[in-house]
Length: 351
Image 1 (cartoon, rainbow, N blue to C red):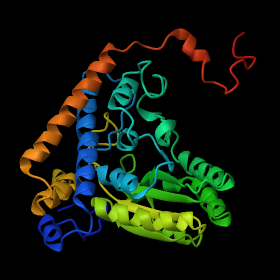
Image 2 (image 1 turned 30 degrees about the vertical axis):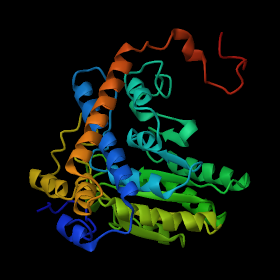
Image 3 (image 1 turned 90 degrees about the vertical axis):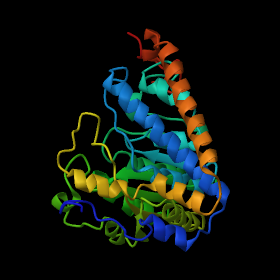
Image 4 (image 1 turned 180 degrees about the vertical axis):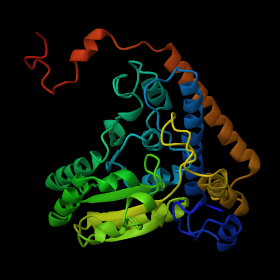
């Protein structure tokens, strides 16, 4: 059983046998899409962790393993043209949105062919083409930026929204409260998401926050807020659909607390000694990918052979991304002076 400091999880939908008996309201295409997306996130990051251990990936590396349903459910619930912004645990978002695994792996290798031209590394990935407005290394910095992106969408009358993800540690930042207040005051089309994996950088929510149900923070601003079982992709999808309908109707922001769990430490340098092996195994039994796999097989949406074929396809994609990154060049020194200002001939960049 989980330890006393373990994150409190939503109980519904975590038992795979009960989930199968309950049936599903989603078509097989959606389940197969979820399975492929989440497996790509998982296998890509498994490989990234190995490569980090081999010192081929350097700097910081924060893995999303275990939390894949939080992203997969967002992407299936939203529209093309919506914007996404998150913190530094940011590999899964662009993968789900369609950024090439080659470009993401090359970015991890700090290569010029990376999605941020090798300048951002693991924590600062961007892909404007798919609506991914970046991973951000300053804790909580993405919260006011997410509100700002939503303001731009409203000002330009695009009908689109911004979904802004943060960890449970970021909710203690003052910028969050300023952004929440402004977003409600101006009814901005933004969905704030707390990916509550229970431990922030390594200390449980129970030990760092007087409010354990973090979604209740939004209620202080009269913001519609709710907890969501982040280990079940169906629940994530449905919650994001509800929030998106509000945002597009001009009713303003929503706060969703995804109660999820990461199987790895905060970063690759974190041995995660603050939790027990029993707790980790308990959450592995609620794995979102296995839940989707079980539903697919139970409802005969695909066979074991079909899923194995998807797994082999993903294995080949990941292998190709590593080869691409290995063979790509590093940025040239003159790249230091590029992408600093929008105006290419801006003065004072050079002496």
